Image 1 (tube, rainbow, N blue to C red):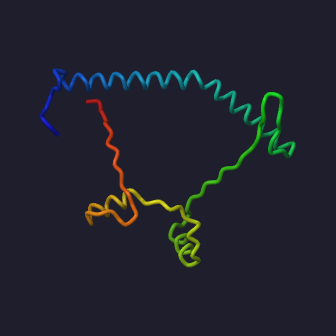
Image 2 (cartoon, helix red, strand yellow):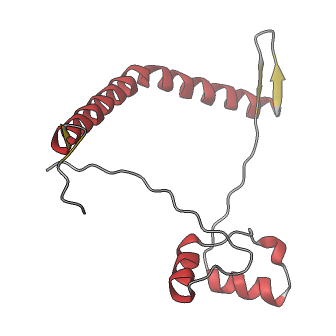
Image 3 (cartoon, rainbow, N blue to C red):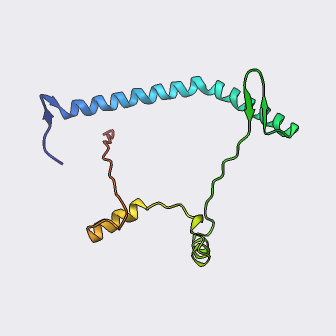
Length: 135
C-alpha cells in the first residue's frame, strides 16, 4: 500500500467517503425497487401456479391463446452425492462424456505458483476489482 493521500488535488479520504455514499444510495434504491415489485412478483407466482395446474390437469405441455402461449420446459441439474464413486465409475467405464471439461481456477493458480508455468492447454485470467469497506 502506498503512502499517497491525494491525487490531482483530491484527498483519497474524500473519494472513499463519496464511494460509500453512492454505494449506500444504490442499496437504498435496490431495497425500494424490491419492495415495489414484490406485489407483482407475488401475482406472477400465483398466475404461474394456476397455469401449471391447468397444463397438468389437461395433460398439455403447451397451450396457445390469442394473447400468447403458455408452456412447460424442463431444465436438469446434477450434483455429486459421492464424487469419488462417480470419478471411479467414469474412469473404469471410459465414460468421460459424463464430465464437463473445465479447468479449476484455484488449482491452476496454485499450479502456476508452484511451477511458474501454466498447465498445457490452460489459460488463467485475473480480474482486479475494487472493494471499499466502512471504517
